Length: 202
Image (cartoon, rainbow, N blue to C red; front, side, top):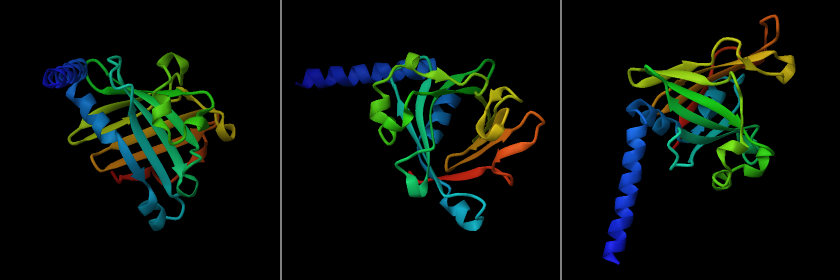
């Protein structure tokens, strides 16, 4: 029994070492900051133009070496079981530096609401990548700052032509500003004053 436990511990150590070798320190640190439960409740109470939104980020497919994969849900606090946005992110190192967060969608996403273990049963090739919607992040001191490229992320929500995302991530908070624009460059959806401030709860 003791030898079996030792073997299991050794295999886990080898797997973790292999992952650490595959990914940069910045990539590992960013993923640690992003994983967890977040809330914009405090912001919604101080400014009623913002909603109380809950953001959940779960790690999935932990053994893969083609990136760090995360399952993400956003839902209104009063409809936590009906998230309005469900995505899978793949974090990867860029050369000569920085991180790309590629965005993927899945079919019939509501069946996975609150069930990251069911997302684990999927495979990456069953997802659809949102081409042009990757967020490119750079480390700046103790935080990561990034955005989508200009006018590359298509969107048809509320007659938009394209969308943009700006993100700042710290150990305790994720600031996310998503906006949609029509063909004339006029904003047609998203917060107007600034990004949503999601405070990390755990």
